[in-house]
Amino acid sequence: MAHETPRLSLIVGAILLALAGCQPIQQAATTAQSTVQAQTTPTLSTTDATFINTAGALGLAEVELGELARTKASSPAIQRFATQMVTDHTPANQQLAALARSKQMTPPSSMDTAHQQVYQQLQNTRGRAFDTLYMDGQVQDHQQVVQVFQTEAQNGTDPEVRAFAQQNLPKMQQHLAMAQRLAPKR
Image (cartoon, rainbow, N blue to C red; front, side, top):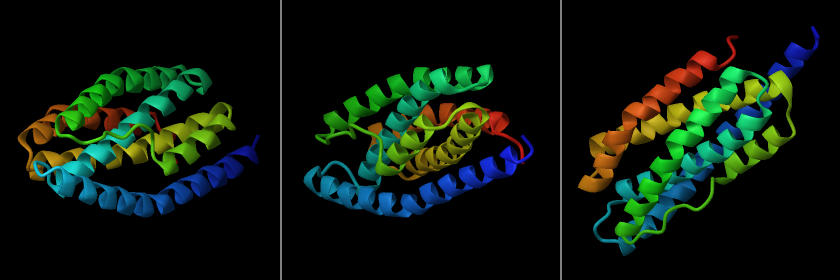
C-alpha cells in the first residue's frame, strides 16, 4: 500500500502532463476550424466561433466522463459530483448546440482527442486511482472552462453567444469550486 501512492502520483502526473501537452495542439486546431467557420458565417467572429467549438467539445467531455465516473468512482461524493456534471452539462450542451445551429454553424458532436485519450485511460483505471485521475482532470478542465466562458462573457461580439456565456459562467465557476474541494490534496 505504501508503494501505491508514489506510483499513483507518477501515473496521474504522466497522464496530466500528456493532456496538457495536447491542449495547445487541440486549441490551435479549434481556432483554425473556428476561423473558417467565422468566415463562412458572417454573423460570428472568430472569438464567438472558437467559444462555441471549445465550450461544445468540453461540455460533451464533461457528460461522457461524468457518465463513466458515475459507475466507476469509488467515492460516493465523486459519484454525486459526476452525476451533477451530467445533469448540468447536458442541457447546457443542448442549448449551445441549438445556438450554434441558429448561427448556421455545426456544433461539435464529440469530445476532443485529448479527452478521448483521458476517457480511455479512465476506462482502464480503478478505485482510488480512478478517483484521483478523474478529479484532477475535472479541476484542470473546469479551470479551462471558466477561462473560456469568462473570455466570451467579456469579449464576445455576438449578443446571443455572449449571453449564453454570461448565463452559464456562474454554474461553471461552481463546478470548479466543487472539483477543487473533492480533488485529492497533495
